[in-house]
Length: 315
Image 1 (cartoon, rainbow, N blue to C red):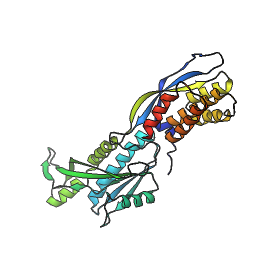
Image 2 (spheres, rainbow, N blue to C red):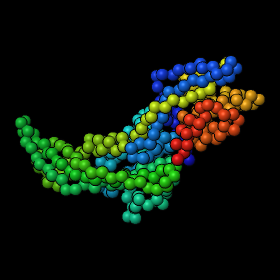
Image 3 (cartoon, rainbow, N blue to C red):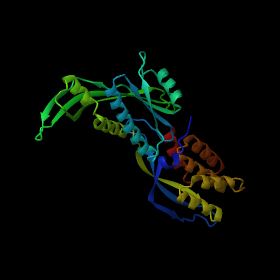
């Protein structure tokens, strides 16, 4: 599956405090520093989008007013996801799909077929909204102009399939609300014409629903302290500054270049640091593999705490 190119930026947030604590256990041994970060947690919906490519599909049922509503809702939903996960970059793809007679978006096979077509890890499908009979009225303003106002109850069904989720199931979310809208009219429109005109102007209501729905999938954040080991040489100091600048690849390249050391404690520290970096980047299995190598080479003080963090994310 594809990886999100902005994973490093979206998975954690470095807090203002970044300190180095020079606690010398022995003169030739390692010191350590603490990286204060906020790491993401799954949203209140239980869906975790960190590091995943995402597509949003809205279904066109044939009614122009409904299609416009769905398009505005989906666009606002996409913008919210991009703001929460991708720093505002346009990395979520959106598609319009004409409804098929046999469509059943709770069917995992159909969702997988759509997932393949959209070339993404996670697929959101907004089914055609369902509007109940609304109420409309026409008011004459002080300047003799006429304004129609309407109130339209509606419901929306959202289906989500995450190909990287161990649950391997389609999740269904639904919601109901009432859209309030007004529009200028000439007074010559029929009752049906006024109703259709008002429903065609539900963009503001649709955007509100889309933004609110997207917020349900926003990641939570948890403050964490991540420990890194440091030795007193220029190469190690360089990695400290790269970590401070959030330049993970630079730091990891240096740590990996030093792995041939005969000093098993130093090697374990390098492997531990690589595991800690992978954990922050959301590469939990790789983090576990690096930490296992570290634990086999030398028993480091901070390894058990990091192991606990990694295993909590692998569950």
